Image (cartoon, rainbow, N blue to C red; front, top):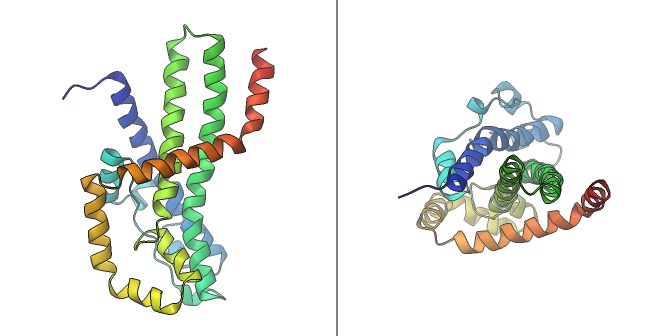
Length: 223
C-alpha cells in the first residue's frame, strides 16, 4: 500500500483529534456533570484536558482507521442530579456539543486560510494548512454525529432515554452488550461508512451555513 502526502496528513489530523478533540469531548461530559451536582468525574480525575485520562485504546484505534470512535466513558452518578433523566441527557449531550464547537472553530480557520490561499495559490503552506483544518472539522462533526447515534454506550442512547418510554430504556440496558458488539462489528466492517459519511457531510453543510458571516469577512479582506 502506498501513501500519498495527503494520506499522511489525514492520519496526522486523526492523531490531533485523538489527543485533543476526544479529551475535550470527555471533559465536557465531566464538566456538565459537575455543574449539575455530581462530583464523581472530578473525584476520578476526569475534570481535566489531559489526554491520558480520557483516551480509550479501542476507540482511538477506530478513530485512526475509520475516522469514528470514542473516548473512555465518564462515570456519572445520576442520583446526584436534581432530575435524573434530564441530568443524564444533558451530560450526554455535552460531549457531541463540544465536538460541534471544535468543528465550528475549525471551519472558521479553514475559511480564512482557504481564502488566503485563493489570493496566493502558489503557497503550498496555505494549501496544506487549509486541508488540515478541513479534515479537523470533518472529523469533529463526524464524531458529534457518531456519538449521537442512540446505541449504547454512545451518548445518543442516554439522550434517547430522556425522550423514550421506560420500556425502551429497559430493553437497551438489558441488551447493551449484544447491541454494542453488533454495532462495533458493523463499524469495523465498514458497513456504516456511507450512512455516517452522509450525516458527516450534512453537518459540514450546516456548520458552513452557520459560519456564513466568515465568508463576508474573507471577501472583504481579500478584496
